[in-house]
Image (cartoon, rainbow, N blue to C red; front, side, top):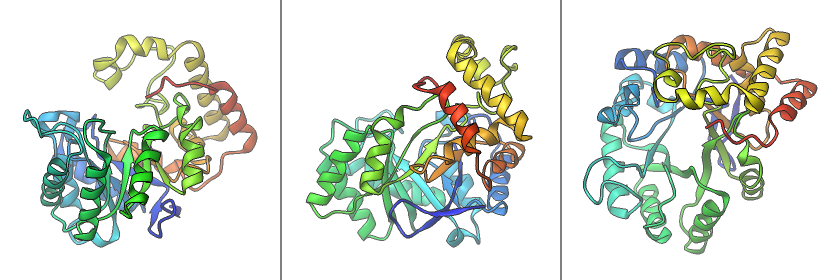
Length: 324
């Protein structure tokens, strides 16, 4: 495993993180085995959220934090963990967003579920235009000064939104975001226009989620066949799947498969190596739901994608923004 400084921070994290969305994992015991195997393989960054749970079912919201807490018994100090706040967790008017009320309450709930006294990186899950940025920034800063959070960051922000938050944090002398987390893969390259130049300028780390485009780049889905019965794309996005496997997207996927075959790698490994070949990217988050998925994905680190092959993948996927 390779380790790298997280943006401008001193903490070092593995280039591959494990995400606990568990979209295709319904069993908590099996989920815990995935976490334990990730630690065995050298992954020291685990990405979670207060709404994650087995089967990506919101009735199980928070259960991924419980699974993570169990898996980290006796190993907590060896692992960097994230959690998130913003998304709706109930029906009440204050059960969503980035108000001080919601942030402080959800941080305490996450700490109890994780069975820990601190969260290493606490992320705001989305931008909240209904709450003053100053209120959010002061609440996060208080959590840092209380020792309940080590670092803070933002997810799913446009460059201007993250820039505005940083301006407020710096102006008020508050703890500033040290990383961003956004989707990025061969089929979704929107980050290259504004986010990548922004993070380079400000020294932020970048956690990339969906590096395999929700499995489309994993090799599990075939260009000339419908999605396997019971798979996520078969259950949720059948109409969109048909569009993703033809045209420019289909050509990009086919080229990925060709490059993987030439290298003797799996498509997932090449897709991850392509993501990590970008200097702006600190970490790619694998959403592998099983030990087998994880062990395949781990092969995406520890080697460098040849420049000519990267250029070939760049050319075939240029300007794509559909794979998220």
